[in-house]
Length: 127
Image (cartoon, rainbow, N blue to C red; front, side, top):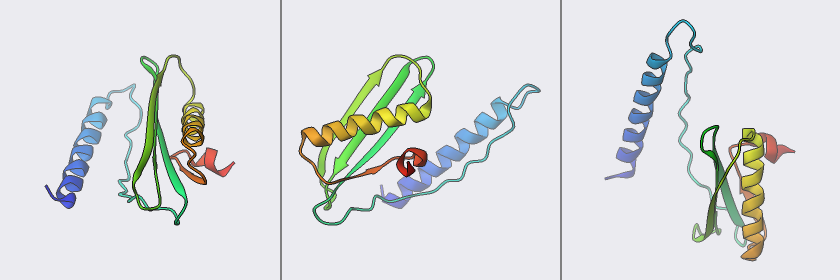
């Protein structure tokens, strides 16, 4: 399957999912419907000699926190990854911070330096 076909199907699935969520929450006590802005972003390699680490988390009050990171070099080659599940509940920003710290420790262990950190939590990256 071509890359554009995969992207088109994923976007169609996401729209269908969001529509179903809006319909499921349309009762009198429901939250107002949400709109999603779908943005497709490509991974952009860092400058030569620099590594890039991407992190993400999943937070659930029922199942805890899922932390993940992946590291690649300037050529896009895989250099390492980690994933970890933690029990308990915390705010999403705290989970994002834990994922970044976990990834930086792993990058240090693998002697990957310098490292650019990418996360969907801009608040952490700006401070």
